[in-house]
Length: 259
View 1 (cartoon, helix red, strand yellow):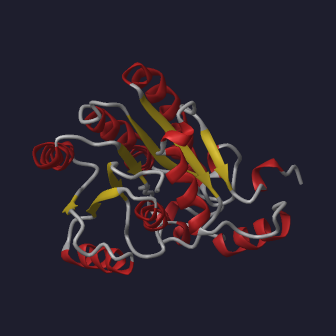
View 2: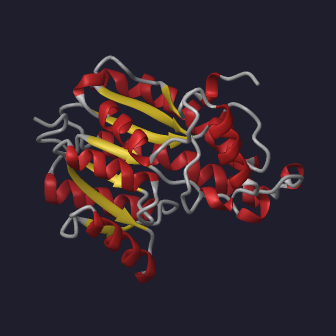
């Protein structure tokens, strides 16, 4: 019996078959969950998402376009879910954005206001915005999970404004957990190790980061997509019923190493 049999949830963030959201969806589907999906607006992004879902055997899954920076789009998507399904049991938030021109060493102090604002909006505020709308559909309680990275806690060269945004995401997780707890809704974040996703490749020096983690992490390897996917399935299931407001590190132990 799967951990998530009979559970339905929304997965936001599949851009292609390398996305963390893709691996999370694979684990959720394997554990019996019914997943609904969104894709970035545009035919090209829809085609990429559909191709990835096809790889998972989910080509017929519910899929809608979503500009997460638009309150109107958020209202439309969650409104459609409410009308068609009536309830949600879980939410996966796996999106982030910062202008890649400012994700290079030596550029952080000059980050323009609009770049900073957009990074925090898409990478952190949208978790709050989605949580607010999803909570209204979690009439029997539920669970939410977002994706972070160690650069939220420590200064990682080139991660820059994205690190600040991820720190805000982790703080938002704690406040969401506090407010939604009485409704039996749990809110957590996974701090995954570096993975070759479309977003990660925008960070300057990413290949060096992969090499450093592999050499220094206690498990002497980089994290796999399934590592993170299975951790997400755990956090979204009743097996983690006493866990909320936490950042779970799934990084082969790299975050415990001092040198």
